[in-house]
Image 1: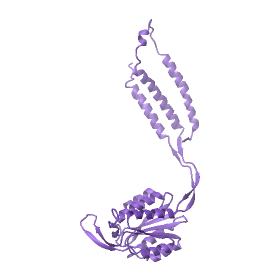
Image 2: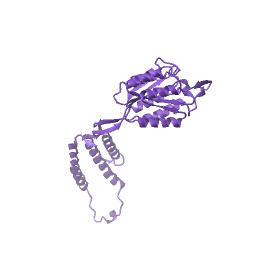
Image 3: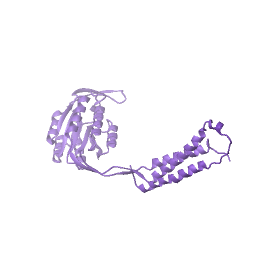
Image 4: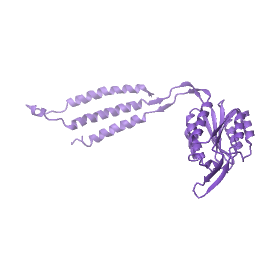
Length: 324
């Protein structure tokens, strides 16, 4: 903590005349003479005598706190230059109906969201964005350093927000559009899906080639097990059976085209390991300058001064009240 007007602290010298006045006033209190005061010496001191001293101390504290507040205490962050690891990353998340399968706990979709949130929390220095896709794609969050906003958006994504289907190519294209605005040299897409491209306008191979030309790597993750899955509607009234099959060949080709990597995750533990591995792969050294930020910190001192003065006045007009 530092003070904007440190010279104001010289006003603490006012304590000297105040203390002199207090002790002179105390010694100048009118007295009544007795020939023998020995019987009075054994009497205990009144608790009000201590309260009077405490009241005076409260007033001194209030004055001192006001002086500190007038000196404008401030908290600062110093300027520094450091090297950090950071990059631009867009998460492309499949929200098609098959993601409601319960071969993950509680579902593929919820497990994917939880692992993605953990991943975002680990990437403190990265510029992150979010794209979701099903039968179409939607860019929900542009590249941002605001972790809280991104996590809040990610947690609010629900199945059924888009037309059902799996438009992998459109999801990649939307993610590429977000990444081209980023300033980091290293750019990548983490594509998470549990199916085969069966919708959208952009073929996955074409989208991958565009990403390669833009210098963007794509890490593809195939989530879940192949076979028939049973999906229960949110209200528990009906169950639908679907046959899912992850197009591993296509996902591998997308990753290889862009210089990325393909991962297969059949349960939530493996999925977490996949994100942990990607976390190690996608890091770029960046030089960052941090500048001083000043925050005013005088308000707590003022509040403390008001509390001391209010307590002093309360004592004066209650237990220390003097009759005329």
